[in-house]
Length: 169
Image (cartoon, rainbow, N blue to C red; front, side, top):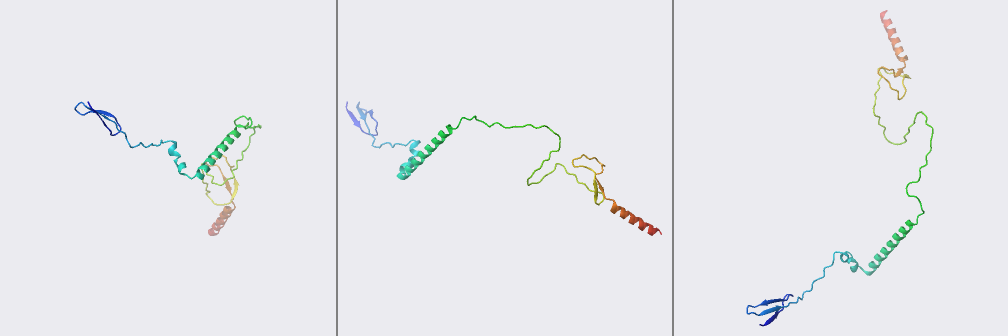
């Protein structure tokens, strides 16, 4: 029984050639596996390896200054005087209740729109002599609202009576 050794693809195998002879195959690969970088820090910071030295130093200095500033800020926040958390107490006062008008004055630009509107028209035209209602008063149908000066109408009636008397003579 003879043994023969075959070199091939990197695996060792025993094979029989049909005559009862076995062959040992040992193969070594000449191709080296490439190391694949992990998806972690090597890929994230690979730009720093290609960056110039001055850029690497300036990034390091900025990170150190930012870390020192955040540490000092955190430490200063812990040294605040002992104060109760929350809002300070509210000062209140009391007053005796009284009835009266509440004047609401708004000093702003804009348009005031009433909830309801009423249009008043007079049956006759003339000067208003007297107002019969107060603002905010509830009025009913038929209530007099204003008195109109009767002098111009009285003069017109007197003139019409004079013309009638002249035409009758």
